[in-house]
Image (cartoon, rainbow, N blue to C red; front, side, top):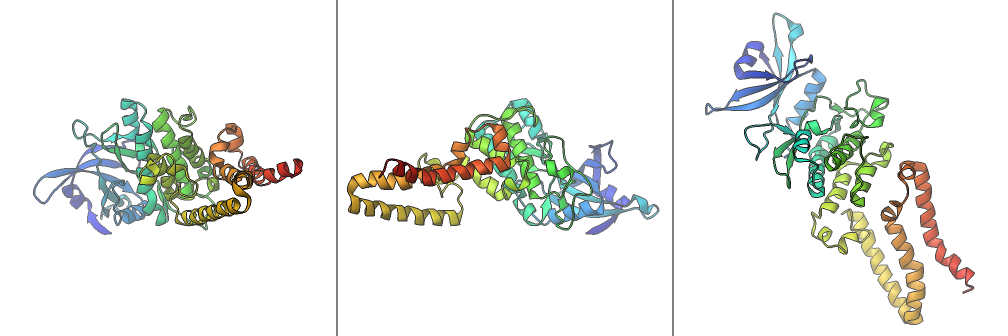
Length: 373
């Protein structure tokens, strides 16, 4: 991290707009000169040493869905050291396809264009997850994911592209801390645990779920819950679960669920194949287990036909194997019929799921016993 004087700072950057006049740490829109004499816009963010460390890590990353961090330095004022401050130079995100050189947030985009299509909303959700993936892996949490901090980089109602900005509230996850020293976030998009306990990557997942709901309803969290495609409803409900450990384990897991609905892989674009249990999440170990299970089931079907004939296949194989497995592997589709207040009660919901699994396994045996076979 380099050090420059106040005079050098003002010569290097032409500040022409204060974006946060009411705040102690300022954010400016400024111009910087290219080596060829042309100028380009940048955002200058003043901050403390801890936030500077976050932006210093960001300057080492590149992701198409994160606003670039060009530089981080300390501005020194020799005659008044109290005015020394850290400054991060970040990308000013233009909305390509929008008239003029405007910067457009997701919030402004939805207000102008209305709610997004399911495809566009899922695409943006996937981009947010991918944008935060490496950031989370390095142990950082954004803590303020909201529509105002998602900037549109491609202005297209059918296929918008985004960049995540404003990492001023981000922190490095500290396992030894009982809770955050400073509560950061925006009401509605802020995970419940962030107020009283230590925030983790699960906190950002909660906010992403709220953003997805906002894109589909146009309403702030708590005012309206999306009630369309039940697969998307499941994604939202899982990501905004009040218990952080019942949410997606990581943004990569959430991205897999979102991409499955988007049909990004060939198997996802085939109505029958995309619904086969074991191949829906694109997880290697699940695909291996599923492949072995299906091979075993095929062998069991052949064995039933060879031993008991086609009548035995219908009575034994389908009744004892196929029906229980269909129930167990399609639990998510079956449980959507339960009221929302039951689905939100994690302990009760777990008991119901366990009960359904046990019933699916033992019901054929009980029925067979009652029929005296």
